[in-house]
Image (tube, rainbow, N blue to C red; front, side, top):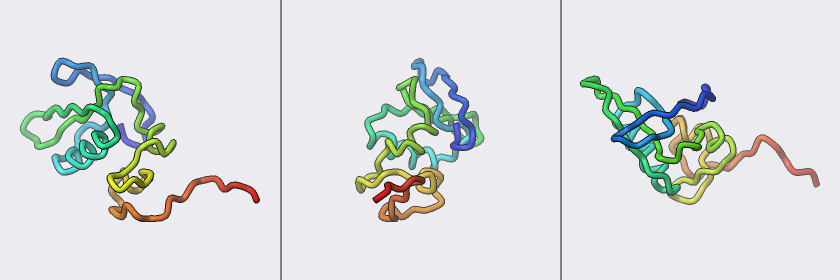
Length: 107
């Protein structure tokens, strides 16, 4: 499930029901997401999709929702910063960028 699709799907990976994080990901993307999710305490399962080199990545927490986790700022990077949508999508690899919220507190 990517950030532009809020549909929550559950699939069995290695005999365990998992909440699907992303389908059809490359091995590099799967490794990035696996490290990030395991750092946040999730157990990650990866299933290869044939000989295409792509994989399905899921977590054993079946109520996990990527959209809620990223936009709710519940995930942290290895350096302790909140994961932004740009970081999740690997559009920005800087973990030190300013944590911009979509709201601002009044003074």
